[in-house]
Length: 338
Ligand code: RIB
Image 1: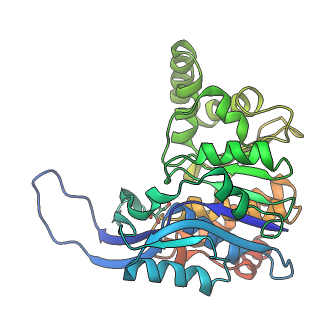
Image 2: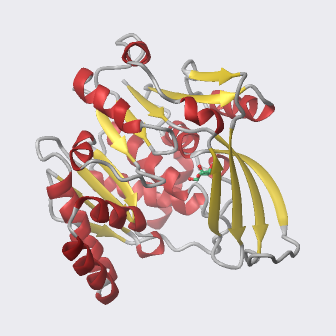
């Protein structure tokens, strides 16, 4: 059994401020921290930390870093969390990926992120390399493989998996968003998006008239409109022959989800927390929770509930990967609430 994440590793340079400066403006920030990050690394660490210790499946990351101290720290953090890093390669000719992050402490910890791709640009593989990475010795037949879009062409790898490893389940978090060909959306089994990304997919795949209607309906009934987006993505965008799952996170407004088995869109509210410190990595934590829970055979609703609690813990701590809780902490939070 196993979960593999193919994605980015970034060194996060985080400045905490009351507000972001206007163009040409300079003023002092509150504090500065460095953290391990990158959507690929964060999601891998989330899966490793949120997996039930009683389950013995392997968590593996596939990606690239530069031959620098950032790269060393990123790989060592994965190793510390029990992740298999055999296929995280180090390159002498390029720097590690870096994210410059501004967190607005007076605005609910909301962030703005600028990414320098660095070694993440090397996360491109030939068919032979993919055959080695995903050989039967390295990866179980029922593996879940997770992608985001901070590497050059995740779709090419998804396509290879679809053609060569039909037993795998592909999880795609299209962040940052890149338009795909309509048929490429059919390559994924589990789509995890936030409200902005869900709308970007609608704009990518459907005609202007429909998009305009959707945008109008969001203004009238926010959650209701996203329910129909969720339904549209699940029924019309993903492949009906697979057990397709669509999850749309709406931040403080909660989560919507739908699957081929249970096509009626369901809703769970967000968890209220005393103080939001830093939202960086909240989405990655949520995704990690969903993946571990589904891999451990929880129902979709149980998986979403667990993940909502997990990300509510993340946003109360600074940083991305380091702020992700471990499985027992989330179980305790769920039990306390019931
Ligand atoms: O999702 C949060 C992550 O986005 C940060 O850790 C940063 O590295 C960017 O990739």
